[in-house]
Length: 536
Image (cartoon, rainbow, N blue to C red; front, side, top):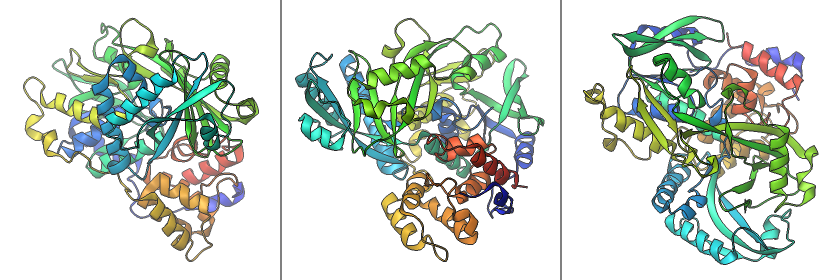
């Protein structure tokens, strides 16, 4: 591992084509009048900014923290149709989800998503029988036009060959279906990049301190750059509140008497080292409505999730001992004890689902997107699923076009005139990219390790070649950040110069997988901070 003493020599001069400095971005945001200011850098805000920039609007996007720094990097990492929605009769919703899932994983971002086979175990005394689940997965695959094969039922013995830690006591059968998986933080960052490529101006770590009003209408926001304390403002014809769990906080800035519009549901997850390879995921029914997942992800095992109402400060959401115990207890329905040792846990995280306000169990609430307009004209968007992030962006844009007086419609290209499946930056076949990196990536330096080549290909697509060039130009950047992870130091320099990374957490938690692997040691963190400080 690169030592702390050697890091100051790494990449002291930002790469050509680097991002503008924060001061330059603040100046750009301050001096222009934007058509749309999006407040909130989660995937809803990012997708809206991307679609708005595509449509020809002048767009600014800001976030108090990092892009995808909260809920959008705390998901179950799935692009899925929503199998559980079938039992509520939401057939159209499942079909729409499947359409979006296939579009993202096959045409928009095949370099960032991968197909994943799911096994749904049927135990004696469980909430569902084999016949019901067999019919369910067949219908589920039919709604996906059998693009992932035909849902069917297999024997416990066959399933255990793919999932060696599967508990087979009282296991009657296993239903099989297909969905997709992603690294949510990487998908969000690539969508930010797509928005910038389309003309949007973006800044993270810039908190709203107040809204700007003109004759009672919200016409911008005052902000404070948390990096250096600089205060500045952005003026816009329309402001979109896409702050997720904080949506009502911003609504009260617009109108102190605004009634609560949402409720929050906490979802916790655990990340564990795998004791043996897994070639499929488990989706185990807990009761009539809930499923617990065990997902092979980033060479680890991801377990979750919980679903309980949350009423505290969104900034304080965290995994509790009760959450950990619940997740491990529920996973034990279908996973052997040796894989569920607490000693294997490397990381845990919790996020908040934003649900429409109202009574009822949060686990049964629809994950629908709601767009509302406040008394000052600010639009607020909340709710939805990661799978449908492109659809949410289009939905918000259609709402903008239909506003009374059509304030932005004349400047917008209609959504039906824009490409329906515009790819994200770096689109490529990840297998081909990994192959090229293995053959060419080490020239003239040492040959790139296979796990590093595969990691770069599936997290950056063709942009991985830019990282390989950095490593070739500076041999120190070709070294691993930690000996037990595939990441190399060139990724840290790239995150600093091209991916808006400001803090060690930005790099270690969202631009790489060091934190989730439990490898963000004090030494690694200090090294990353030194490299980030070399941006100027």
